[in-house]
Image 1 (cartoon, rainbow, N blue to C red):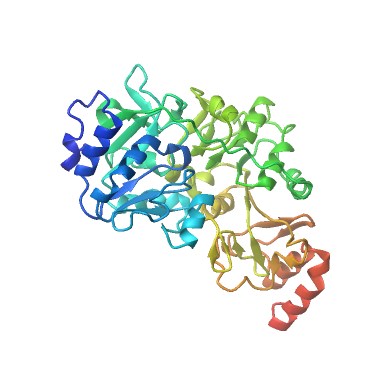
Image 2: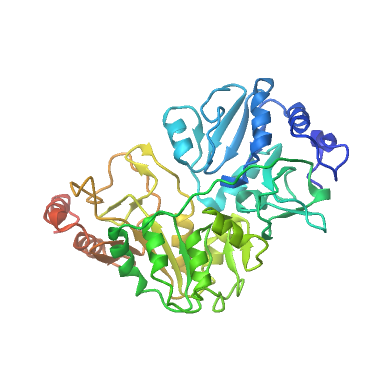
Length: 440
């Protein structure tokens, strides 16, 4: 069934030709019923000029909602300036949406990244509004730096594209043909760059505990943060590594150029780097441009634990904020205050569990606030949300070593976690564990 139906069938009278941005915004708003839902891709997948134009007409809408993960641009509708007309629902908090959500200006929907496409489809969206590269000589647009949940909706939901000549043309399951697009416009917008964090000395110490555990021929997933970045800097002499990750960052470019990553030991997508979105610097964006080494696939495929588990020796590395003595990881909240979101941490932790020889590392420094607060605690802080369950967590890593949890008893887990806590907090942790009955 062609998804370009209903009100959107007349959005563009000449399907193969672009409309002006303002004209397209006018036509789109005319097609949006009260309570309409729109989907916008992650990060640089946002159609900047088209959303600007829609915002300028926001008062013509009634109870419309834009659903997006990890927005990079501050916008009035995110700040709640068009309540009752146009509002924002975040599916993973960024620095911008975090402030807005905590101030009550936008909404937040928690979900594992792998499940977001289905949840968004269930909203029966009017359209996906996305940035894209110009059409190639065969008439295909590319969604550029992403596939994420948007690519999973191709053929199911109408697409309205903003063609950006600065958007890299990428390969994978993130392409649409001219005839499959409801309408499109053209606008040039600089891509936002997010340099990888510079690893601290502490990050490097934590990373050093992990690197020796990573075998040649492993397939790796690197999450966000200084510690995963530090791990990548130590992998340059490894051989035949593969990459299967939700986020592609600059550190992978280094590993490809050093010959450490070639994907030849992978069982799926052999010889390819697999990702669902890229976020980094211009160097990364130039690397993925027209580079068929990198496959951008929908997140419900990339993050599906069953797909991840098909790779032998899969290594997942993700950061957390707090771990209790049962092994529960709170990675998205500070107490009751939301910081980010679930993302793909649980997806990849479970996938590593399914992998023959797989390892799932959850990393954190042992303390906060100049050593005064232990991040390893008897029980999670009141109101904290569990991101990765105790039964899924494999290995927890601090600067003091690795606590191996899977298959261990509660007492063995508690003892292993106390052993990698900061020495200044170990006695108190043990006393609290005995008082609560975790240890006897």
